[in-house]
Amino acid sequence: MRDVPSAPVEPVLRHRAFALFWFARVGSTGAYHMQAVAIGWQVYALTDSALALGLIGLVQFLPVIVLTFVAGPLADRFDRARIASLCQIVHGACAALLAVGTVGGWLTVGHIFALVAVVGAARAFESPTMAALVPGLVPPALLPRATAWSASANQTAQIVGPALGGLLYGIGPMVAFTTAAGLFWSASALSALIRVERAVRPREPVTLKSLFSGIGFVRRRPIVLGTLSLDLFAVLLGGAVALLPIYARDILHTGPWGLGVLRASPALGALAMSVWLANHPLQRRVGRTLFAVTILFGVATVVFGVSTSLPLSMAALATLGAADVVSVVIRFSLVQLQTPDAMRGRVSALNALFVGTSNQLGDFESGATAALFGTVPAVLLGGIGTILVALIWMRLFPDLRRIDRLGE
Image (cartoon, rainbow, N blue to C red; front, side):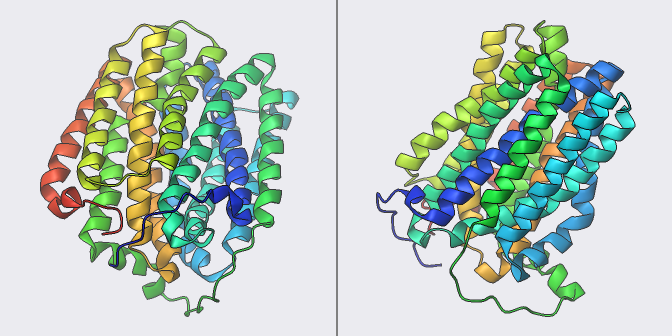
């Protein structure tokens, strides 16, 4: 593939479509994490069970398995911004129902899981369409910089959302859920305004071959396969977010505000790093950097696992977040730069499946492991597993390790 010229110092937010995308992502992601804090605390208060916390991730992930191979082709055939807007409307409706059920007193764990499943279905469509949108919002030379800005939107939301969610939940669960609903619907309005000027994509017939063509595309490109699978297995093992309510209440002895602070800490580190990357894009030794930050992610997870101090736990989570955002920028840029626009929806859907597997299924793995071995051993095993995956993938995918520049 041809080298992509280095990005000029042109601010990506001057592109109206990207600015709308950025603010929509802040609103939607912030609402999602605000809602996640409220749901996590509510479920743990109702069940006092680590396994129940893990089941939140599993219930949210199951619809992704079913819908991934439908979401990708839809994102390649129809207006991606409209799809994202509709998904955000559904998110808002679920948050509103959580608020109504809490006030009405009829909200049970079963009802929460059902609404979480609907959220998972909406995210199965929203995630790949939002990811596939980015390359069409800025010139190709600005894609790495736009990716860093996109990551900063995500991390800004992950700082403000959990912290605000914990604070609002302390006032009342209904307040947290209602605020989340309003943010989701505001994001939907912004997404609906996005206009992408590009040649019309040919609408190939929907067949089994077209539905699963993304798999063949990824399999034929070892760098893309290595990039996606590294995230899948490393984060699957290293996820500790599902267990944060246990750490907040039983290990660090804080309340909902402490849970919000813990959930915001990874995003705080990630935001600082994404702002740095937006102004200082990665230039050389990209492959080695990807594996180095994955190992750092595992080490930070181990430190968090053994910590009994809130400041140390926050520092470990912030380091984990900073390492993760470097990995995100590298992985996203590599995948998007090596994927033609006509395939971006399907490849982004696969990426969303891998990310969903690593995050939501990782939450279930953490909850199940904690139920079997205890909370701290579960986090330690996950961190060590992440380090081992990075070392193994360095040997399995040498071409990925040897990549020097993103444009290669």
